Length: 196
Ligand SMILES: [Fe+2]
Image 1 (cartoon, rainbow, N blue to C red):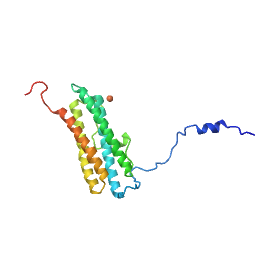
Image 2 (cartoon, protein in one colour):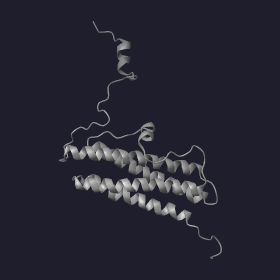
Image 3 (tube, rainbow, N blue to C red):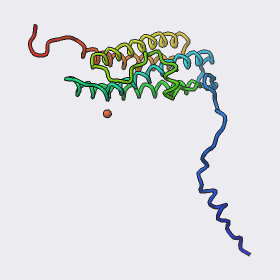
Image 4 (cartoon, rainbow, N blue to C red):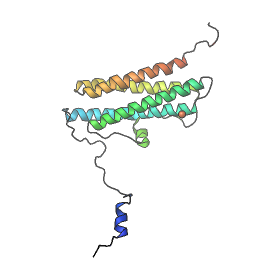
């Protein structure tokens, strides 16, 4: 006699298993050993530094989007476009830093509430600021990132973590320096029409 098919059992296989909960597989601040021929202590130091840099990079990234939306004045169009370009570049840096943390066996920060707790970049107001104040705020944030990135790069090189050193020097430092140039030139007080 042929078996009858139980519709409920069949449908169970096609039903999404949502509302699942479980323990974390790796707590924040704990490293797994990755086979990359690098001392665990070197990985640990790099992960800790990179998470600080990640928090600051994500705060700077979001500062660019805020300014992209809220900018006003005669330089609106160029700043609106420039701020978004820098937002995209900072997003790329955040991704590279976070993935480096994972590659070293760490856990990267990810969420805005965690970033807010860790970042060294001063909290911006919710309201709008004039373009020169936006620019000054960005330049200050860039300097925080550049200062720590240079120190972290030297330390990573000293402990043999050349991959982290390369990421910091070739990507983070070079990109931030170039962005500072493009932003800083907007607050040079030169005459618009008649040369003095
Ligand atoms: Fe936009």
